[in-house]
Image (cartoon, rainbow, N blue to C red; front, side):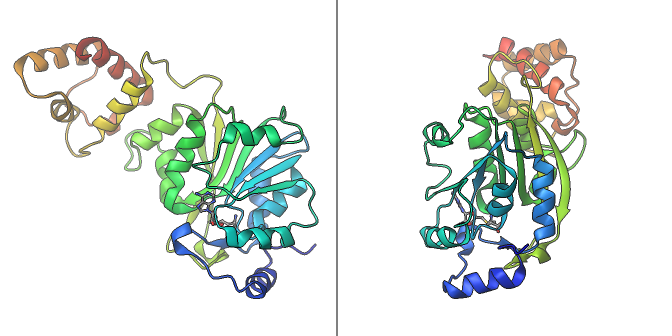
Length: 291
Ligand code: SAM
């Protein structure tokens, strides 16, 4: 079967349309059908699943999604790609291309346009790397109950999102995502399978939404603010980061000491040693004592 992503097909499509890549839009197109097959398999699609794709490019991944899912809604910001997608995806009647910025579109309204809006929705995409984190946080924090995300990103970002405590990659992004999603790296993708080749290797990250957030907190905003605070100066102890956040007055120190005691956390450790449940305990104790 011929694929849009076959290297010579991609080249021919790009040449026919005189397309020039925009680096500013993170345009690195996949030209390896085996990788696309693996991404689609990782997403475990069926005719009972709708898919949202971000950045279809010339349709390389879209085509594989269309072959395996009920319907695909693909958001593409670059108007120059719309006539190309009309041509490359002409054979698929289960694809809607939406010429909008994924960060600005009204997703709640858009998803009502699926023929069967009651099916579970998975997000499958080769993300534009310059806005990977904003897109993920935008989608995860939206009130839309996406079942799963199977997304390609820079390997380094995938490592940060899925990191465990006490590793160099662990930080506030790991906590922000793992609070909502169970995240794991599915496989690594070498830079050589893209045109143009990016400067970094990539990874497919699979994130499955938890039925409940990983931990229960009384104030989510405060919890996320505290997790950012703990990693503000990675080399400093938790105590020093707390002083930087709350101030060094004696009264503040007394309250902080009490909060740490209540959370049973040593002031001399670094933020990176705390598991997410420990962070939650700390945030709750700080909330009680410092708010
Ligand atoms: N899916 C294609 C593939 O795998 O070959 C292209 C992936 S390319 C890494 C990222 C795509 O996202 C580009 O087509 C780019 O124009 C598009 N894009 C960039 N920013 C976007 C945004 N804010 N909203 C929607 N699409 C965007």
